[in-house]
Each structure stands twice: as structure tokens, then as C-alpha cells.
Image (cartoon, chains in turn cyan, brown):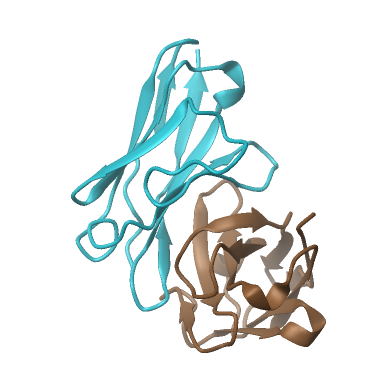
Length: 110
Length: 121
């Protein structure tokens, strides 16, 4: 159960697009379409942003999108807004009733 | 409205035990698998354990396997985490989270606010 690999930080200006990668293995990300993404603002509980690789829950803005290729999943935020500044975590099912998170990425909106 | 309220955290000495609880309301508890996720101070999220709706599937992170035990009482709409042989590295905010499905391994669609566990002598 090794943590998924995410960049520690990314940044972008308002209106720009950014992509956060999440690299796992053939035992987790590569084997299941059960990748989810969470947004966490300081002092708050995480919030589900993407599930099943690319699906958005009701109420989540369509400027958030997800994808996957092989062992790497990605979260793209288009049209960056100040309120998007937060920590983002990916998570994948890893088999045998276990899940694994990524290390987290701090998004800074410049 | 879905509500998950954790309790039971506190300061505990290394090697001792602690039991966390999560009271669920606003939904049919036994229609969902449930999880514990923790976050050490200033660190990222770590999945700890999950349990299916009927206890048939249970999973643990390697870091807690053999020391922590997850359980649930569907009649009381409650989730529990018994933590034995606590270590300093178990110090974290422990979140209760609802799985989207009845089995472990989907995604977390609702979260509590967490209960803080501090392991220190």
C-alpha cells in the first residue's frame, strides 16, 4: 500500500487551466476505474469533486474534470478561480477492500 | 441532511488504547459502507479502514493492521474504531466518511468534521 504520487504543489493565474497528476500502479489506478478526487480547504473536511475517474457529483462546477491513462489519473481545473485555491487529493481502490490516497497537491491561484 | 459526528478523541499515552465513535444521521445507515480516514497535523489524508454494510468486507491500511479494529452497529447508526497499541505516529485528526456503495472501495461522498487523537507521554 504505497501512497499514490502527486506533485506537491501547482499554481496558476485566474482564468488559466492546471492539471494535477496522480500516479499509481497496475494494482490500483491501473486496475480500477475507481479514482476519486477531493478538495480540502484549510481547517475543513475534504469535499468530493470527481468520482469514477471523470464523473462530477451534483453541485460541483463543470470546470473540474478528470481522466485516466494507464496508471496515471489527472484532475484538470479550467478557468481557475480564487476559491479553487486548496489542497487536492486523489484516491484509488487498491483491491481487497483497501483504498489508497495520494500525498496531496497544494494549488495556489496567483 | 447527512450528518457524521465523530467523538472519542483525546490525549493518550503510547501503548494505550482508545475507541472512536461516529454517529450517523440523515440517511439509512445500513445502506452504506463506512470508513475511517486520518490526517496527521500538517500532512495529507491517509485511509485507515473501511467496513461494508453487513460487516462481510473489512479492510485496513498496513500501518494499522493488527492494532486497529473497525466495527459498526447498524441498530445504533454508529461506526467505531478501536485503536490498540497506539504510537506517536497515530497522532491525527480522524474523519468518519461514508462510502458511496454498500461494499468497501468506491468513494467518499460525505465526511464528518473529525476527532483529534494525540498520542504522547
